[in-house]
Amino acid sequence: MIVITGAAGFIGSCMVAWLNEQGYSQLILVDDFSRDDKRANWATKQYKETVHRMDFREWLQAHHFSVDVIFHLGARTDTTEQDTAIFQELNLGYTQWLWQMCAEYHIPLIYASSAATYGNGEHGYTDRHDLPPTLLPMNPYGHSKNDFDIWALQQPQRPPHWYGLKFFNVYGPNEYHKGRMASVIFHTFRQIKASGAMKLFRSHRPDYQDGEQSRDFIYVKDVVRMMAWLWQHLPPNGLYNIGTGKAHLLRLGRQHLPCRWPRTQYFLHRYPCRYSRYLPIFYPSRYAKAHRRRLQPPLLLPRRRYHRLRATLLVEGKCVVVIGQLRVVQ
Image 1 (tube, rainbow, N blue to C red):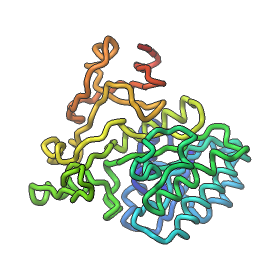
Image 2 (cartoon, rainbow, N blue to C red):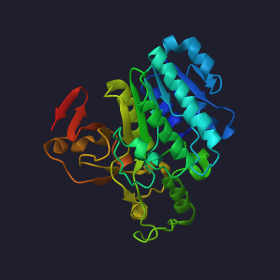
Image 3 (spheres, one colour):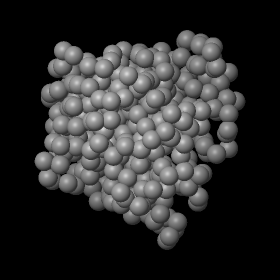
Image 4 (cartoon, rainbow, N blue to C red):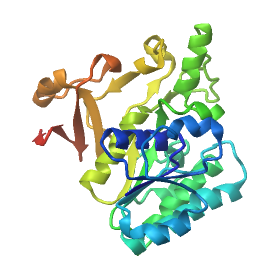
């Protein structure tokens, strides 16, 4: 069985949907299922059982022998929340308990960290293991995620395979319930759809003009594929950035924003990523042959126009093209 915590949320529900598409139905969905506004995210999915997050401790102790992997995507994600006790309970303490159970029962664990751990980026955005103690997150949410990363790296007893994923700016379907915590892409899309215009952020730094802020945006279904790849291929344990590796100005993307949500545009990058050691990138199959011959500059393409996708993996700066079972290394 596969356990997904946060299964009623944004990324968790997309993970469940992807697993269903791949033929997995023996899924254990863990969350607080009392919110009706999240019901559409999970009610129609195929799964074995739902477990309330407060009952999951007893459930795992009774069923650990049948669990193949745990995707721990449940957390308090409100970056404006200032009550540190909430983050200590849900983000730090709960995840520490889950880590210990996975170590004891030898269950692979893939958990959500956050790019919020990097703060203003004073120390860069690399996922080296010596960096977390020096990072300066800007809010209690980021501190809770970074505190767990530091704690995990210090543990002598660990799950057999574990991956802490620092998600950058994730956007896509099933985030409608997040309110002000939904992605900038989501809010911008709604603004343009309603009024034909978008609001830009005021800059609080003299070296950036209003609206000149940039972010690394990544589509949620690509995030899901990255998590699945880690589970299936088992690279070295550790912390991993989950992003495209390139920041984009939101105002420059205005002309590319869709008129309907399924037409969301998507950046393709052909340069070795400076962020992650292992980063799957998806691109249209018609470009596969040219991509094997040489690296090409970044290209912006409409996602919906291409249905057959190939996967590319950057491993320590080398380009690995995965086509079925064939692997070509540049």
